[in-house]
Image (cartoon, rainbow, N blue to C red; front, side, top):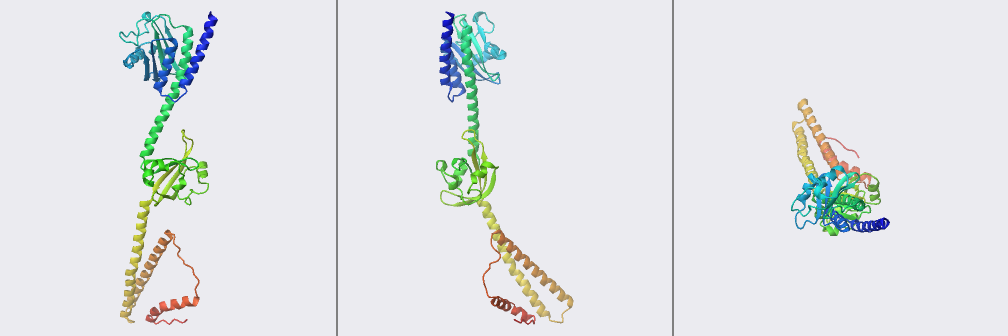
Length: 402
């Protein structure tokens, strides 16, 4: 008879294990894990009263589920039992407790009128332990005294082990989802355009600012290539660009993006490979719009060029005035006056060279060449120079011989 019961017990455990594996092998919430584990245990043993608690830090109640309590909220009763009753004792001592007779055991907390706390019968309370920590506790009660035996404990112990593992997995999944939701909210609220691609350059995500900046709806951007946004001949957005990102640290470069309406915008890009637990490694592209900065720089350059050119006019007047003054004074002028005029003329020439240098620097900053080379007859160049200087030479009684 004992052998038959043993074989029946093994068959029951195998069937129950198969059922729980199928039910718990899914992405479940902590509350759903508690519900399925408790129902499996209560239905297997036929216990009308049952409760299960999920704990954090070994003591803090974070979720609970109960059977046999009707429509009443089970949390107040469960909290009292966790603090002063059987469940609290089991959690504190890390061990399973069987109460053969509820009426005579002080661990059973009497709660008159509470459907979850029968006043007679037997009870079984077992901790859910994972990696040495109590992650929950399950209590089963039956109206018959001495209902729970050693064979029952072995069966419920298996359920508790599977439930503890599933509960920890559910918590990790919930924590990962919560972190992902926080990241998505932060990602979408950042006031800088951000695009995320896979390692092949296909766009997988774009925040709200990127969609506004580029003029695309989010669905229009997804699964396009980054080369449809960036000019493919700028910066590292060319051959082997993603190989460079995959091997090394983040890179910064200036590029041009094309908006949906065909406009071109200059951007400063910071691209970096990042690790994602959900979809594998990817590349994050942070786009800083340089339009305003470039407009201000262009305005500064235009104002500088205007100022440099405008300075040439007053300097020309200074030079002309000095030349006229020298003529008016004639040859009998005090040598000290002549010396002062020479100083003023040299200073004027020095300032003119400085202005020319500033104009050359601006041309270089704009990428312009300072020299325009072309073929010419040397005699023509010399004739032009002589004709340009002849009036000044005549005024100074200088003869030019060609």
